[in-house]
Amino acid sequence: MSHGGPGLRCASSSSSSSSSTTTTGSNSSSSKREKKITDRLSAVIDAVNDRKLPPELRGQRNKVRSETDIINVVEQRIWHSMEEGQFENLAGKGKPLNLNTNPHADPAEDTLYRILSKNGCAPEWVELNKEIRNKVSEWRVALKKAWTSKCNGNDEEKWIERCESLKKQLRDINDKVFRYNLIVPFGRQMFGLKWEKEVARLEE
View 1 (tube, helix red, strand yellow):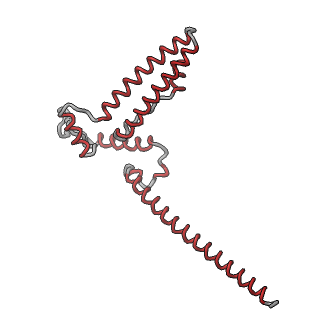
View 2: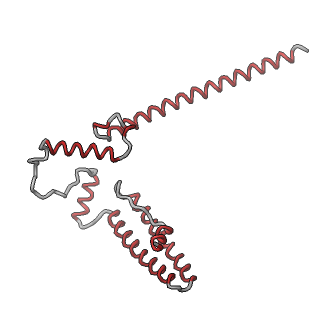
View 3: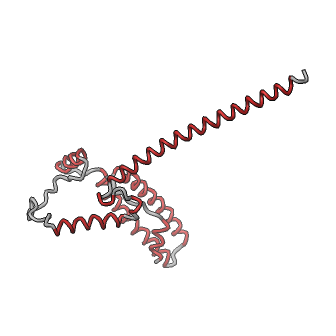
């Protein structure tokens, strides 16, 4: 009996140590698999981004410090082509450009826009863009009017009241900007209004 106790404790300790080792090994194996997957995904992303670069810069993405480096390469290629006369005797030279189609647009979107144009309609984001610009212009006029009134020594309470109204209108405009940025083609997004920045413009 006296020898049974320690023996059981040793067995228990050994079992616990074995379980801990198994768990550690499992976690290590799982981490390695995750790292392999992450590395593969990174390699695919790098390859895709690399294809977007001019041929002269492919495989040298770490050396591309800014868009200026890419623009310089493109300009060099254009000048080189001009020197070789590749822009001479182009098809359609001297004739008006055909703006009915956009070769860079998604074919489905281009077809949709042409149908809308023929029927005297415009895409929702075009109409929303006009509405936002009109509202921003009207809002800035109202803000300037309220600011001028404040600077002329009018009642401070009226300024505070007008501020609350103008801030509410600003939120409504920014909601429209958010909606616009969701539906507009990539690259045409716009910034919303910021109260502090708009007031700072008037203080200058």
